[in-house]
Length: 131
Image 1 (cartoon, one colour):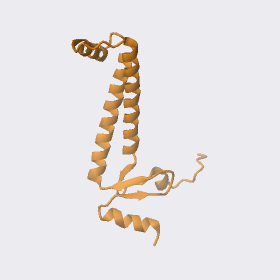
Image 2: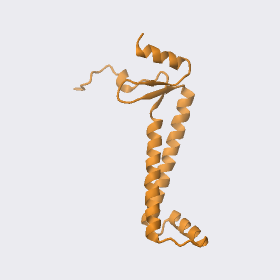
Image 3: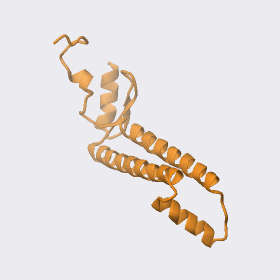
Image 4: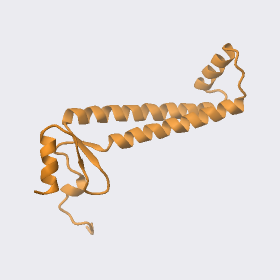
């Protein structure tokens, strides 16, 4: 019994399995779960990156939409924060959110549906592509 036979049985039963061959671990899941993970991980990644860049914009420009809203809310609450501190907070939060979105996307790409192979495994060509 090979490793492929043992992991193939787990996928037929609907349980997630990992493929330890190659450089990383792929998690094989049913097609419905694969589609859900792909859609939501991509959505979270895109929204995180866009919002992160909005925060970076607020950190660098005094005329940004988000920066103006935060400054107005802080002044309405009676909180006075120096622009340099606020810019640093915006920049750190923006970079953190962009990193979070990238991490979610990377984790989401580890999933694949049963029957989906890696392109390298399906190829009949050798490792050297001389043409």
